[in-house]
Image (cartoon, rainbow, N blue to C red; front, side, top):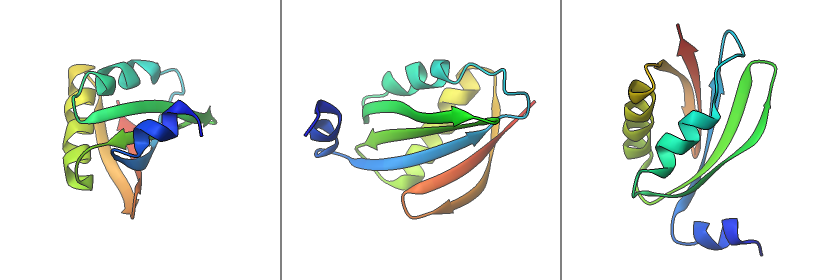
Length: 97
């Protein structure tokens, strides 16, 4: 078992999909912001392309707490997000200009 999933044993794994209208947004800066949060054990981008980026985030908390932390992280970057869909451990967000 790799180190990413060993760390995840202490937290829940959530999948976040972010749709970006221009495709030019540096999504890795979002990972950097999230990794600064003490509730985030680890975060990684698993897929990107076609204006969508998919992240797996190991988070020590509830889904709604992760949503709030995600919104705070994007505010620090000057981005605006709106949730499109959420079910279980997966949510889809759209980046607004």
